[in-house]
Length: 254
Ligand code: NAP
Image 1 (tube, rainbow, N blue to C red):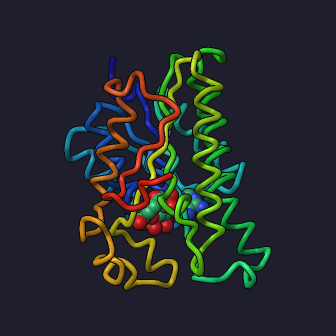
Image 2: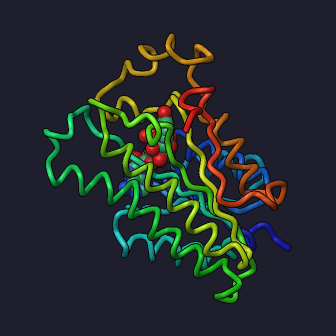
């Protein structure tokens, strides 16, 4: 079997947790499809890093909120090899706002990228990996957030709610395809040191919140990626419908 026969698609694989997940998933011997929306250079660097380690990878532009882009991304995966994994990682936050200030445009974008995009990608992945559709099985890992339990009041309740729906989708889809060779799990990261906080207008968020975290430090993207790698791997063969907190103890209560 050649490397190119087993493909894992990581949405938002160009930076942060997604980039780390690409590198870790490549260690499983899978070829990696690195999705990005605008930062081609970052995606190409992830591809180059994987290739330097002897793996195979390609970069593909695509916005997960566009059905046409999602279909094109999965067509590119088909061209690369056989899909065996999806990491539904692409996600965004927005500027801190109360719910009574949120516009329809903001809400639509937040749900389109963080929720509908994950559904569209999961749909296409199941069509390829489920034995019901002639596939040979695989694994889906969804990125939720500790925000789904905390609620993110005065910051982004919309984001937290979208991530709450990711938890629910994970459980429901896992049961739907449990006999079809496809495992579906989610990871709920806590505060992870990536650029997402600055992109939401809070570049100092990680530093400000650090002293209140149980471990008195944020997590790294690679600490999340190692859990993603495990959930993608056969080591997790009896794990489905699970939601794993990788949060350093933050928000571990239901
Ligand atoms: P990040 O550093 O901001 O990176 C975001 C990634 O998503 C980039 O690769 C970006 O591509 C891509 N992306 C953004 N919008 C996209 C779209 N519409 N279509 C396709 N790709 C898109 O984010 P992160 O911190 O690594 O977060 C990754 C995931 O973990 C997200 O789902 C996030 O909600 C979740 N999470 C993060 C934290 C945290 O503290 N960091 C905590 C809980 C959950 P470009 O490079 O092209 O812009």
